[in-house]
Amino acid sequence: MLRSVVLARAWARLPGVEVLSGRDGGPLTRTIKKIIDPLVVRTSVRARLGKPVLDAEEAAELTALVVADAERLRATAAWFTRLKRQRRALRITAGDVQDVCFPLAYELATGFGMPGADADQTAADALRDLHGEAGDAAVDRLAAYLADQQVAAELTAELRERWLAVGEPAGDPAALAEFVETLTDAAWRKLADSGAGHALGVSLRRAGGVGELERVIHEICGMDTPELGLQRGEVTTIPPLDRGGEIGAELLERSVERRVRATVRRLPADERDQPVAGLVDEELSRCVAGFGLGESVLATCFALGVVLAPALRPLDGASPDGVPEFARRLNAQVAREGYVLHARRALAGSTPLTPRPDDHVVRELREFAKQFLGRLWIRLHGFDVRGEWPSDAAEVRALVTGVVRSASLDLRTKVRRSLMARLPELEVAS
Image (cartoon, rainbow, N blue to C red; front, side):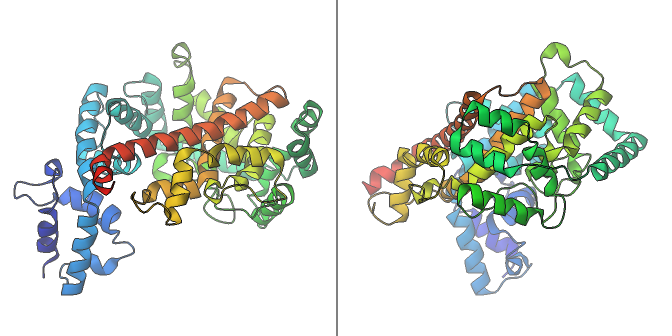
């Protein structure tokens, strides 16, 4: 059977997806290209379902995948409408609206379900994150600056030269362990002066660095290291100059362009007219520093987060013996949340009257360490841009605790929105 016919018949069973459909009622070509194939069917791993002609078994599997994603596709259609409206309001013209917004709409549908009361703000924030502040002169100047081929070549060479010039600084993981155990001002001053964060970050650029970091984490935290989202391979690669060169979303391999865009958004409005070349040069300096943070004390704060992150496993409940008290408290802060307790009970099969938690929520809970580190790095990068840093142990504890709470609250909001979207289903189940 022709694949196009199978998709059209499956699509006809979905309500509320008209904006993603053509005049014949079937999915638009771009809907197939940008949503169905890469995100719903995932033909990259199910190549047999991407063939022009399918046998009966393949046709049934393709239909099942599309129909099973009906609610998210309906939410995707609703988010696409919001995104188009916000693109007009923000005067964003870059890229074809379907090419840009179809995948983003599916991402928002995955994270939030159907649009809620604050959907317009959420859509606007997502577009700003994707495009940068629309109409912002500094962002426009940055794009023009990096588009110059000669400038781009010189900057790429400069970044490589600086990256390779960084030696192997000495660090003191013992100072990191002491602070985790005592949380005192004296231990913080010793740690801040030790250069441990810069050294650990730079160590990831050489063979064996990942193993060294995992050993430090195990010695301090007593836990094995999960996927932390720092880099793609065993060695941190030199970050690309522009966003088009990015392969993944790993923290230490973000492009210079993405980092400078974030810098511009964090600057006060009256400081955004400074020369773009200077902003780029400052970001190059940060890129080559340990953990991509120019101030050594901020790299040390991030190193602290890295050694604590593996203990953040809220779906596992209380931390096991041997985990430092500070890490135990951070994990308990999330593990006792009602939505986490519900997810644990549902996964254990002890709440038969309610649906199982959404897969994306469970995935983010299982990857909470990665969520935490992503937020912590962004916060510290903002400090770096503004020339700020924690001054004592109390401020460091407050910083880390606040980031954990922020990540947890974000997940709680996603769960609430998901439950509201599924309220009719829950009422029937009860």
